[in-house]
Length: 292
Figure 1 (cartoon, helix red, strand yellow):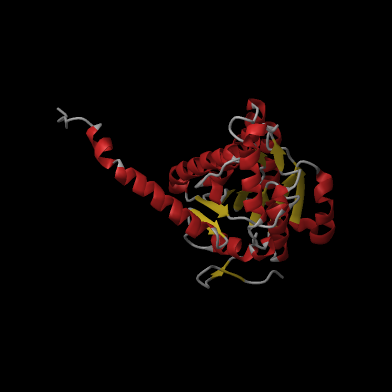
Figure 2 (cartoon, helix red, strand yellow):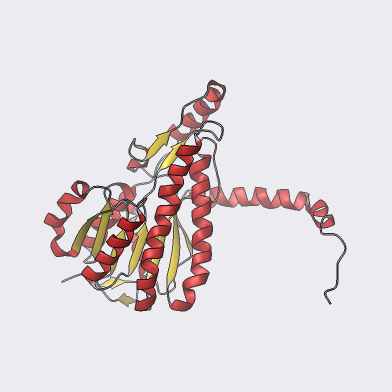
């Protein structure tokens, strides 16, 4: 029997949510997949290869549905979402976690690498959302979770293209939330800070060919990253469950303690810059015109 679940406010919730999770083979995706299964939920766990999910069925039995799915292949995505919905009878949480980073300056990264990044981080996510929405609308319920980043709000050198994919990711989910709210559907952007996951591994990032002119910058950024302390990914499931079990989940949710002070400072700087140039900005409006 599954343990009783509670919302962030302590109210009891119905047990047994059904999840659809992309990128479930490692990192956050794997941790959250197992945590959901351990609390008695059901999970359609997707990854590029079934072998990377092979152990889950032996441990969790019929509560897990491993699916081979490449998010860059829309037909695979549509088939996987439909299969999961038919298999479990519904989908309560659709969690888009699959993604990777591209390391390189704006000048260095080849256009083909940037397109490939967007194929996974943006178009892959869109394929999942667009496949799931008709099913969620028919249910009259469902929660779409997009795994963004603090870098979807503030960008850094050397990973500008990854940041740009997350800025686009944020805008898409922001619009989506307003569009599907009338159908009883919810959206949350989960924005992690730095965590000690496999995101920095060769499987989770691509490095652009380096130009010597950026050697000093690259050294400075890498040294700064080495000095930063990542959060414990195993500490995150309770926070994620608090969000998905909440009667009114947030549109944006920082995962970890690092992002709020960082983003607060960045936004204060932006506001100060806009205020400094406000007179010039307002003059560009031109004289007021009355509509007839």
